[in-house]
Image: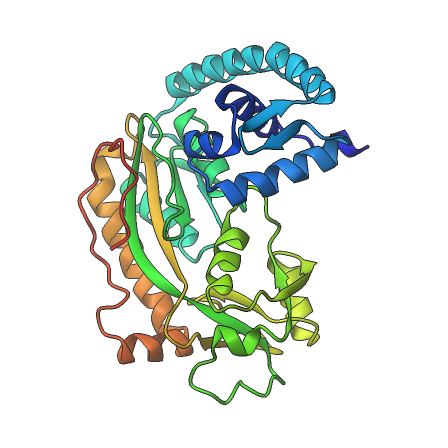
Length: 338
């Protein structure tokens, strides 16, 4: 049953490593870091039940088991690529102001985006769906399966550009600590990563969304690598923290929940960027400025309703600002963090 978890994107990763001949070159081609790609490859090998590549200093060469997987991938992927291309063309043909599909990662902007679309296109039927991975949503935008999405990324792990997709950063905000309400540090104005390194952590899984990779890389700079025995997201992660079994991190706009508390991190070592995206040829392309203004106003309302973040913003004026750049066509380089 291991293979039941395998996804098409995993086959693309295996093919990219084989074509590049090394994890370093494959990571660059996939807009990933080498440690992140290594983690994903180990996960794929675990799912399939065998080692796919011999990894030496000179590069990565497929094992006999890897050759078998590659042969199957090479047979399957062209058909899938053709299917995606055909459905993308059909989706673009069917897209109209009367049907708008939006997506979102776990962020406080989806409701504001839907309200903006309904205000601009009152006759439209708006549907939405959420996914933990911004890359999966970005792929859906590029393929015409979504018209707009709320995405997010981190410094040095910016979203890769996609043909036909306009990426517009909205705001970059700090990442905060998520603690049990009974934690001894909840009375402090801020807590440090070094202080939290002695605790067990709950972290999101290291696949798809690169949040865990980013958290780990920054924690490593403190010289302390925290233990992370719990792999969880969303409600399950909150419950682990509430029970006092772990600490974790969260977005600054995290809604206050009984039993857990939010505190800024001393020195603001971690950041998260909210990004709005829509298809260049979709029904929302002509309304980019209006969408940005509406979503930005909603974000500020959310900030005001988050007491810890509102206090942080008062003490750090301009640190998490809303630049509201005009929508632009995709640039071959990822958009820099402000």
